[in-house]
Amino acid sequence: MFSDRENPTQPGTGMPNVTINDKTPPLGSDDSLIHKTELVISNVLRGGVLLSVAVILAGVCYYYALRLLGRVPPATFPDTLAEVGAGLKAADPVAIVTLGLLVLLATPVLRVAVSIAAFAIEKDRTYVIITAIVLAILLFSIFGIGAYLGRPGVTSMPHNRFGVLVFIALSSVFAGFIGALAGLGGGVFIVPILTLIFGVSFATAIGASIVSVIATSSGAAAAYVRDRMTNLRVGMFLEIATTAGAVCGALVSSMLNDTVLFIVFGVILLISAIPLVMRLGEELPRGVQNHKWAGWLKLPGTYSDRRTHKDIPYHVAHVRIGFGMMYVAGLISGLLGIGSGTFKVLAMDTAMRLPMKVSTTTSNFMIGVTAAASAGIFFQRGDIDPMIAAPVALGVLGGSMLGAKTLNRMSNVHLKKVFVPMIVLVAISMLARGLGWL
Image (cartoon, rainbow, N blue to C red; front, side, top):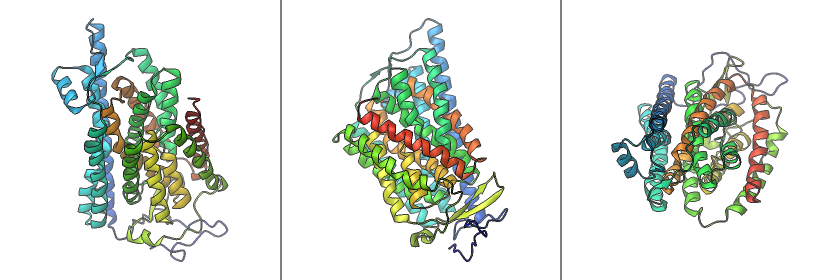
């Protein structure tokens, strides 16, 4: 376990003393095996993204090729796996686009499944069990609750103009860029853009927001994991809380008043941001002591900072409080159809005292899994319109990859200066929705 004696501070700064190329791995693990695990998970995310993009583009091109040839594509889209299969057999371009979106939605689930094998290779039984629990919750949500709450039947698709879809994709690039930097899913931008500018229904905008969360997570996390900035064990452990919360939120979402929820959580978010604002100039957390669970769960680690060309070791505090906050973050995601990345970053930065770069990159790693826990429900409800969600996914993926490259060159202080306005923007957006202004 790291201690202040083992990890002395720099004189006059209170910051950890770091050394170049001091790759301190999480406790009890072989560094080469951990690096292989990170590469495997990064490649799974990257492969899922590339495959989904290829399928989506093929479907969109086929759709508009039919229109140019004077053939009218279907005006409905499938919202069950059976309908997608039937559409593929009939060479339905919308079914092809939907398949590409399903590949994207399935990428976080596959990443969790592959992680079980990766931890097994490391002979880390604790995280094999933890990751298996996360996978079980995901599958239960998708195939259990999703099927129960779904609305079988075809759904109309009013938006199919090429110009509109291009503008949606371009708008989504910005959402993905900011989302990758701040650990958000981009929904805070996607929902207002779609509803206010393009006249998309709120339910469809929320469905596209869920897709944007997964796209941001998959696109940015592939780079963050490869560059060793994400704490995989922190992410995996906390995903138990976020996925369980997302399932509970989805179950009770129809029983609660969304108006009150948006207002309450908007106020909570503004209050929660106060400690972060007070430490706005702090580059690295100071005086952090490892929580007693941190060593057992192998949570302390290092991240590679390309800006300073150093590997920065860090401690992990208040694990139980962070776990509880993650459950609330998942609950919010399931209730309101948002990525709740702001709450995740706040939990890791404010409660667990992780460096801001680790908080945002680990949040990006997690939000896709949290969203996947409710994505199946939104899909089977008919809320994910493929001809709206497809340009959102493509734009967000491009923006998130650009954001991932940018974050590596930023300081933690500058990153906080990006994140704090995002908190305020998310809180105002939630309050506006609750008060009926959006």
